[in-house]
Length: 324
Ligand code: FAD
Ligand code: NAP
Image 1 (cartoon, rainbow, N blue to C red):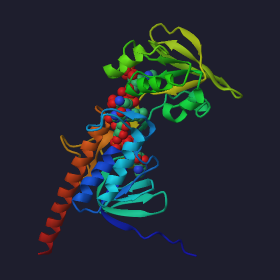
Image 2 (cartoon, helix red, strand yellow):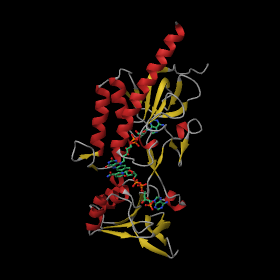
Image 3 (cartoon, rainbow, N blue to C red):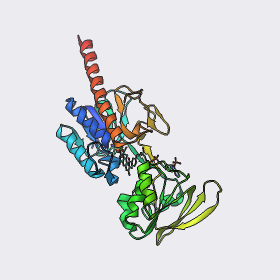
C-alpha cells in the first residue's frame, strides 16, 4: 500500500502558541478577517496556566492565571479563530507558502506565520536534578506543592517566579528556604516585601546547589549547597526542591532558519515583530528577553497580527499588479 500523506490545509495566517501573545494575535487577526488558525501546543494557555494569582493584568485587580487564559481562548474563538489542539513538530520557512507539520500528522500551508511559542522552564543541569525530577524535584509549585504539606522545601532562584513559588509553598510547607546565588533578589519590590514578612520563609544568600540528595525509596531528602564566594559546602534537609531559575525561549522550530540571539531569542526588526524572514512575525517571550510579562506578550501579539495583515495586503497588491 502506498503511504497516504495528509492533504495540506491552507491558512493565510498561522499562529503557533496559545499564551497571551498567541491569543491576542488571534483576536486581532480574526477581527481583520484573516481567518487565522491557532495551534495551541502542548501547554494550552501557556505559562500562566501554571501560576495562581495574576495581579498585574490591567482592568482586573486579581485573577487566577488559568482563568485568564480560558477567557483569552474564548475571546479568540468568539471572533472567529480556528483554535486547534495540536503541536507543531516542524516548520519549513525556506519556501512559500510556509509549511508546518503537526504532531497529529496534519500539515498546514501558511502565507504568514506568527510565532508565539513563549518560553520553558530552565533547569540547573545537574545529574541529580534529572534523577529526581518527579520524585521531589519540580519547576512548578502550583502543580506539585500539594505533595509537600507540612514538609520542608527549597526554592532555588531570586526572580519573581522564585519568590512567588516560595510564597505559594509557604501556605503548604512547614518551612521554605529560598536559596539564591547572590545576596540581593531580582524580584519586584512588592514581592520581596511579602517574602521578607513571611515567617515561614528563610532566604539563604550566596549559595548554589551542588547536588540534590536523595534515596530511591524516599526521593529527595535534601541538597548539598555550595557558597558562591568561598566554595564551602553544607547539607540541608528538604523533601522537595523547586527550581525557579528562569525560562529559555522556545525557538527550536525556527533554529537555523531565523536570526536569533542571546541563547535563542528570536530577533525582530526594531520596534516591530518582523523577523529576519519576511512574513514571519514573533511575539511574546520567544522574542522578549527583557520584560517577559503577560501584558507585553499580548501587546506584541497585537503588533504581530497588525503587521501580518499589512504584509498579506502588500503581497496581494503585488500579485494583482503582476497579473495585470
Ligand atoms: P507562553 O505563555 O509561554 O505560551 C507559549 C505557548 O506556545 C504555549 O501555549 C505552548 O503550548 C505553545 N507552543 C510552544 N511550542 C509550540 C509548538 N512547537 N507548537 C505549537 N505550540 C507551541 N506575567 C505577568 O504579567 N504576570 C504574572 O503574574 C506572571 N506570573 C507568572 C508566573 C509563572 C510561574 C511564570 C512561569 C510566568 C509568569 N508570568 C507572569 C510571565 C508570563 O506568564 C509570560 O510572560 C507569558 O505567558 C508569555 O506569553 P507568551 O504568549 O509569549 O508565551
Ligand atoms: P528571571 O527573572 O530570569 O530570574 C531567574 C533567577 O534565577 C535570577 O534570580 C537568577 O539569578 C537565578 N538563576 C539563573 N540561573 C541560575 C542558576 N544556574 N543557578 C542559580 N540561580 C540561577 O526569571 P523568572 O523569575 O522566571 O521570571 C521570568 C520573567 O517572568 C520575568 O520577566 C518576570 O518578571 C516574569 N514574571 C512575572 C511575575 C509577576 O509579574 N508577578 C511572576 C513570575 C514571573 P540572578 O538574579 O543572579 O541572575
